[in-house]
Image (cartoon, rainbow, N blue to C red; front, top):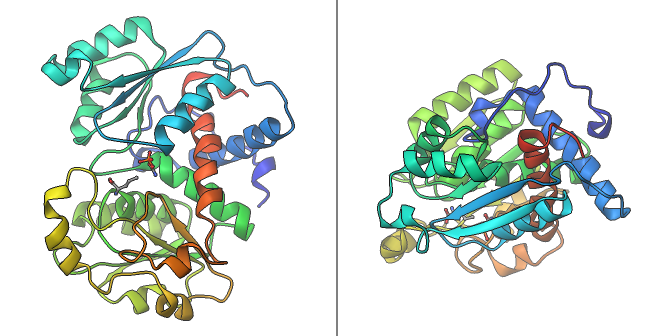
Length: 322
Ligand code: CP
Ligand code: NVA
């Protein structure tokens, strides 16, 4: 399939991006197709104006490099403006209710991107506000990252359906979102995590059902080599996510051996690619020779945050135009 030429099967009707589970396969393809177009326009200096006169509020309760920069720069490139709101500065951080924040921001801006802890806070913003809400990472999900990952896989492999992605490590927000996103597009997903750190049974069940509907499979196991066997894409993420800093020492022990390295690479396909959402800890979840080696495409992946996030905003806030 040539994603640049993708023809939508249905009109895009999503109001928010809370989790990719809410988006159909067709909607995900529409987003990836628009991301490719916006990327090509940006590279050739073509002006994009779909957010002209519009403002995105970006609420951050956790640190960020890629998410903040991609949304902020992306908004400007689409002709709009972005507002950085740290929860240590705004009244939300001092206990102002989410419902009030949602209603106030809905009167002044055209969309909210939020990075926070609880998924239920995003649901509350969506319920009480009247503007698009975009998940910039919660403890449960990181859908924006997965859209950039799918874009990168498509660019490198020329296809998505029928591939195999292996994830080694914590059954965290990245594992949940990758398994949901990939299973919706017919990509096999195999996750290796130690006991006690496997992805949530609920999101696993969603993904298994998605995979059944799209002719692929989702496997959860404990052995990194089993997961990585014949994989087209190897993926890992930090052992301790933001908010889990106090568990770092305990997690370091639990995740020993759950590393993407020369051994896991050796059992994957010869032309496999390595992805990591970043930031990475060399020597923990990935060896330096892999992340800095020839299979790694982590910086193309990081760049694609910009193009994918522009597509999300163009669809949710800009009428699906460039
Ligand atoms: N991958 C990612 O979301 O990076 P940041 O935490 O830097 O935004
Ligand atoms: N799982 C990581 C992803 C960072 C982009 C975290 O939540 O900190």
